[in-house]
Length: 101
Image: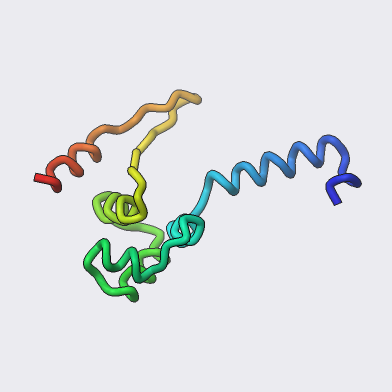
């Protein structure tokens, strides 16, 4: 199918595929890492049904999101963009340090 695409369509298709790779919801990330909801639940000391609910939420506390990401082996960074300039917001890194103490 790509062979029949124009160069412009091919470029747009690749850009969209790249964007989708960079934008995943929590459930997609978990599945890509080949982790089960049960494994995340055990790491967070909650039930599997709670993990399912968290994955469906559009809004949650930053601390909850940080713990979920860490349970998958990742690290959460909050970045704000202004006119193409990325600024890492450190306030939330401080939350992780306080939680560890």
